[in-house]
Length: 230
Image 1 (cartoon, rainbow, N blue to C red):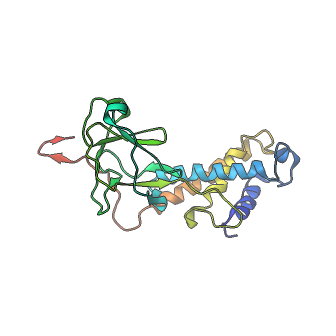
Image 2: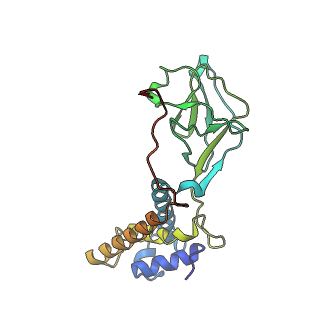
Image 3: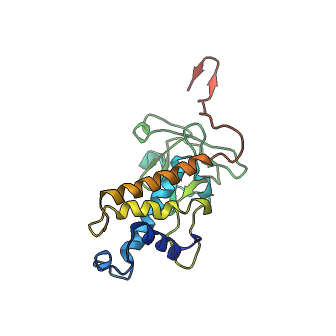
């Protein structure tokens, strides 16, 4: 069975937890039909996306923001900020590779921790809540864009899941583990362990095909000059 849209993922979830989609216990508190199981599926999609991002497979959701607009002044807000896109999940960068770039691809700025925001001045940025900030005296190019990983789209019956096709089995697998913690779950300890074992097997498959080429994965070292690093 091909896992494409929400309906097919829901059927797979029902098979994993051996549940009747019309089970009174599972639907007792639903305000609309299937609400609780749909919530479990969307939570499964979020957890599956988080796993793939941590595993180094997040580029599937890589996108670029519109040109950022900035609010505030050095005098009134000790820097300037821009609201993050509504579907922002994680910036595609770190302190060594900035996710901020100009139109020609030139990277801009260096990330710092928010606690250091008043100690730095110049081309530095940091994240707080749903905003990205730049420190005082930052020379902001115009336009400036943000490369980021977007949140997985909410599942729907009429559209394909916003997920790598080979990894869609992870969605009902994560959702099934969540379902096993619910009071209406019919299985016992053995069934819960079987669901965890199934999820571990799928995770192992992901790790086995992570490399898109024969290049071995290796840690990236910090940029260095001479015998010093920063």
